[in-house]
Image (cartoon, rainbow, N blue to C red; front, side, top):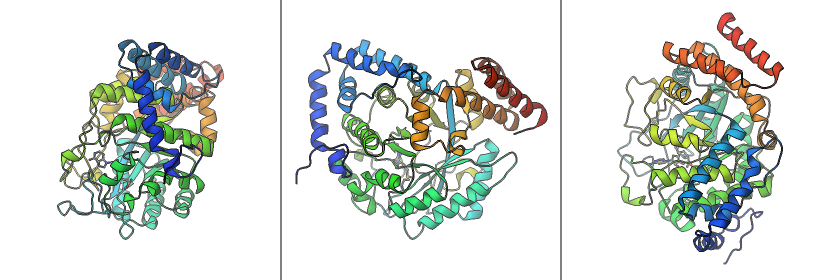
Length: 479
Ligand code: SAM
């Protein structure tokens, strides 16, 4: 049966409509050398440079795809410059930090790119007990983390929803030294509305689910067995999550599996669909690239993209979905992350280990790892590197705790309020990090940055409050 494109439909075949994507790619090829059109599209993004004054519309997946196809250097430089400026306008120079926490690598799926696949007999299967979770979380808190993304394979017997809920409860309940984990994002397989409702009640932060690929044919080939092989069930998961009351959802494509132009159009269409149906787009978009991993045949992912194209995709996501948080993980090395931060990334992981139980081991374990980590620096090294580039590392979770999620966060963000509120809060959480966890060198650099940044807060009252709060953290031990 043929499906037609309908962004408001709840059927994946209609909102990620293959025919519409094919036509989009043909349209982009036909117009990619029309420089006037490319610059006109860029012009449409410019209201986003002033989010507090103007409400710019999003450019469409077709327009964004024309920019992606365009090979003109002038246009490509203009895309990166605009992405940089839009990131600054919405998010300033703040970069939020988090760490993944792998709970279990038991999995019943057959994903061809993932070493957790059910047929892998070489990988030692492991699932953390609540005591082990406690030990991992304390190790993460000892680094300074306040925000985690929990990860688990799909296995109804070993990792049922009750296990995930109990683990979230354990994580939130740990009080250690100067605080606790304040936001737990969850990356688990697509599930039912009832289970999403339970995650909401357990105070989930963002529900993250990578699409892997939007290309239905490719998806079926890459996911031959297990519940994840159902493309529509997987692709419609965010609608069920929202129906279950989760208003912050995180999209992502695993770049390298299928053609990047198809993926890019699908990703933007997914964001358009969430806006059209729920009135709120994705809270975050992640841009993982597939990595070599144990027992994985590299020929199953031969659509790898160059670093340059990867950076362009990041810049284009930023200008197309300007208010959405963008995440880059330690799958990428220092150089790529450095560039990506310039073009729109707003969240990064640091000090990550992708093995189950990895944070409590002295040396980085590889046997239960999901993929090779390229950026192996410690959290303190990451913080120091961010500071050197004039980014403000942030551990802030105030929006979440103040109930600013979903459409409330989006209107806050679309009105350019992030800078007024988040900047002082980010500085305060950085001061806490520096006092509690930093090495003396990072402490020194960090306080020099704080001094420069505090004086950028325009509102006298807020600046004064910020200076007082930081004084109390340093001199009175307040948190
Ligand atoms: N089980 C959940 C699901 O089915 O969506 C998600 C958890 S999985 C631990 C998190 C993500 O890791 C996957 O969605 C996939 O995109 C990514 N991943 C799997 N294998 C990878 C590889 N070889 N390189 C990079 N990322 C990979």
